[in-house]
Length: 105
Image (cartoon, rainbow, N blue to C red; front, side, top):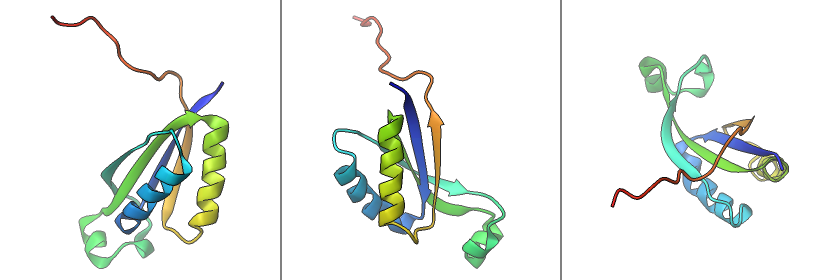
């Protein structure tokens, strides 16, 4: 079974909708989210203040799971958010799991 990591970067305005969507469409699978900044040459998508600062606020979601399931999730996401300002990366996972060690007690 091949595992992957789906990373989604989207506008902060879509954060709550994305959280709700992922909770509904990724049952049993968890995800993480965090505030990040996007940097790049996409000036047309940036406000004047973002152009001056050289960065754009974004929200990043990371979803770990089976590759086939994440590919299916991506197709559904593209169908349900066709006009969203969103960027995705689907990357293989070499290793994942809990870090288990001896108790300090």
